Length: 518
Ligand code: ADP
Ligand code: GLC
Image (cartoon, rainbow, N blue to C red):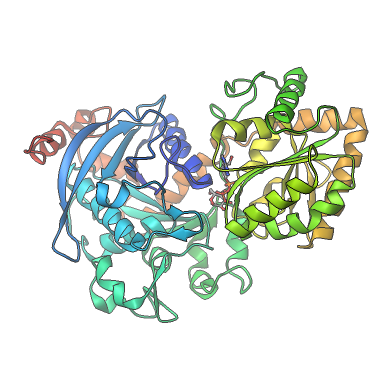
């Protein structure tokens, strides 16, 4: 099956959270299953990490409200694979110091930026003749692709053979803009109505993804249920209930080539189940790096966006009581100013026991996961959560609030400790149980080894995505992708190159870039 996955951040090129991890690893898992994925993402020219080696593949004119703007399409690949990554480049929109904004504020033109990206994906898919069987779009930034396909490219022979699957990674971010900015979407004004893009008088891009896609999923089964309730639905629960037959939950997988202490070269030492000496070394190094007192006190860790979702208010409320226990706490995070300030203030109060590092630091994130014994994730809500899965692999027992994906992956007393009440007391109680369990060395060792042996790789869930893609095709009245491909002729199939493009498409790509780069 040819799968075009579009996401606003992709590891290792640009990342603010788990969406990037998913977009950078699910396609590789799909390729291992024999499918032909490709990835589209913006080219954040000032942020590109992971040594993106790219070549220009096409120049396109992307229709916009003011007539049209040029996009360069650069082609690279996901590291260690031959999965093509097409970067949409336009400095005006993506050559900035942040992905969505900086600190606590979002860029004022995020609507124009991502509308441009969505339209560019459609134009590029067509001009490069990628002929996807499925568009897999993710979160509000790519939701407009479903609207464009439905309303602007309905009869297009390169695009109309595709179904659309929309994954909601986080319903808390919907891409809401004032109604007068509707023209920036490129859609006709009548699409602004209560059944489509209108939401309490505003323009809501995520809602478009929910109504126009052929199938929808979120990143855990529990979260798929929660968002259909008044409490968890952020105003969209009615829309979601209306589509409940096409709404699924698929828990995220982890990329164990990046997140596995047995092979993790960002760590000072490696380890695994039954051989944990390396973990003790990571703890020593973490204490040193973060200015914590040396010793063997239980070390609690947390790596997080500092956003309300992550339970920072109850963590901050719980810290004085946690500091009464014989423990230390290492926090790495960045985000909302008031949380940053409160954490720094508390770190000053408990020198040597509580350390806070602000900013995004990939290497330190690995060290916190490896060097801590207990991981804290007191989220208010959590669609899936990757950090508790990473923690399991690193033998760092998670203490989590029982919500969303945390509830689906962590079982109290088996591979972690859970609490339900969203309060500092709830968190403190669970931390106390974890710390006292750590004192029972033999059973703790068994729990840690058991956690490290659990399998949360994509092997568990990539197949579920394939079934979802087929279901979306059926929903759209399209034949199963295998048959569709045969229908297009064996020749077309075998003539495709490793990058999934036919020689003809290559020529089209070439024809689309008549001008030399200046
Ligand atoms: P979310 O996507 O809601 O932020 P997830 O648990 O799904 O939460 O994924 C978070 C990802 O982002 C993890 O890979 C985590 O290690 C990473 N991360 C979060 N904050 C930081 C940070 N300050 N520095 C480095 N990595 C971070
Ligand atoms: C979101 C969610 C997180 C999830 C990630 C990847 O950012 O907050 O729970 O793991 O997306 O799906």
